[in-house]
Length: 264
Ligand code: NDP
Image 1 (cartoon, rainbow, N blue to C red):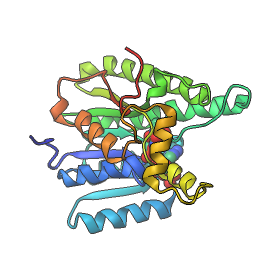
Image 2: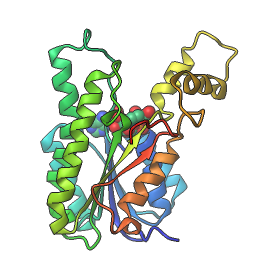
Image 3: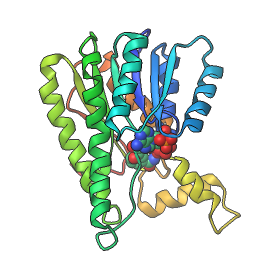
Image 4: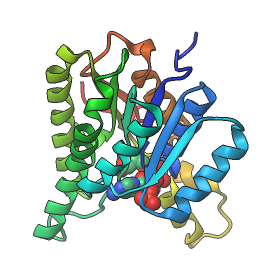
């Protein structure tokens, strides 16, 4: 079975690292033309070099931009339009989480977290909508977290903001169905990322290797599959939902949490 992505134009926000970078890699491997962004120009350039070496002759574009700055996102969409003439897949992945409970979450933190989780989708959707409307298989796929349905007190602001993003995703799915644009999201549990690698480097028990260290976290948190996810795993879920293979699926959430979900 093929994802049917040959020649399609895919846009990935936050494509310079982790889940976003693995999504870019899979899209390029499937023959898509890919545009991705990130804020840090060095990290973006490194991701571009890595993809250029892995996929010689591939058609891609990178653009340094903060998804929370509307004018920058509009400029990114302008570049994609000028280069590729349209867009078929928009994957909203850029972002990060915030660890804090109610007592140590200031008013400003609540505002920032809500802004990050909603406007990191609102600005790209607004900017890329005219390009998606030119496509014969348009889709928007949002990276979300299981926290949207299963809040955790130690990530109180992120949990609330994730619920807002899930709600927003459903509204967009309904509104855009008439335009033929499918809108879906994935709900992540814990996935290996730079953040986890940094914590591993700072661990007190130097005898523990990466597998033992992450297995201990999974056991502590009660992840049934006994390990953290690899970034390639949500990348595959994202590419499936975004691709024409999922042509009759909209307003759906796909769980990528190693069985950590407890809601029905
Ligand atoms: P990484 O930190 O490895 O990658 C995040 C990517 O997003 C980077 O390319 C980063 O580049 C970019 N980015 C972050 N903020 C912005 C911004 N404002 N504008 C543009 N680009 C931005 O993280 P992951 O791969 O782990 O996470 C990807 C997504 O998954 C995030 O939205 C995260 O919140 C979500 N998630 C991850 C979980 C996990 O366990 N890993 C769990 C639940 C959700 P740069 O910093 O240069 O801008």
